[in-house]
Image (cartoon, rainbow over all chains, first blue to last red; front, side, top):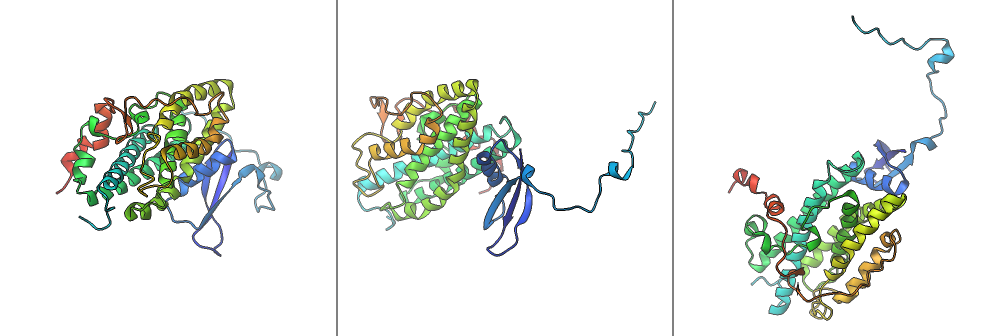
Length: 78
Length: 258
């Protein structure tokens, strides 16, 4: 499972997205987030599994819905 | 003599010995962690090994530096000793042969060192007391890594049996490491609690790991016959020469500046 990692430098700052880690459960994800992103002196850090994100909207409709075929793979040069 | 050193000669020896035991054990533990940076089962856990290795080496550095107050030659301590002079915990003499063994070392040995550090937060020896809080704080995620991985291994029958075997191997020596029952370091105010108190605290601390293995409660009979209380090792044993060559940084000596 992919977990997105958020942290901030001081209380009251907005959380900043700092990266992600792949882990089988919350427990290991916490350890991995800490050991991967601990280089800076963060005030606090949070993780959230990517599959729990709820999309509110995006400005880009999928190409298929616009009737545009996906780009064909280029032929290998002979 | 520096006034921060405990006044009683016996207490001084006990403090010096304990600091060396912790420093050597942390240096060896850092080395074992480093060996698994590239061999770990997934990228993230390799990064965790790198991070834990850095912590342990940093702690060892800081602990060796404390020994200046005891008129020790720090350069010799770090770079000039033979394997038989090391006071590191015996369980780190060899590299863990498998990931399950690595997890047992991470979960039990690292936690044993931390339990010992916690007993020093009220130590009568001020320089030690002032530094341990930072070390303990940095250990939080080491324990969490060991517990999380022991749970993960225990989630499959093969992993559970490998973990079980590794824990059975590691546990008796880890329990023994706290020293002889009736050791009077506590009475000198060097640390809070006797060796037996620390053993109890250790068993309590590793309960989340022991949950994942069968029939192990750490209460197996202790054998102190060849145990050297100063180094907390079996007499006549030592890490191998190759490990110590790496720990000393022999290959990097040429780059050291005066």
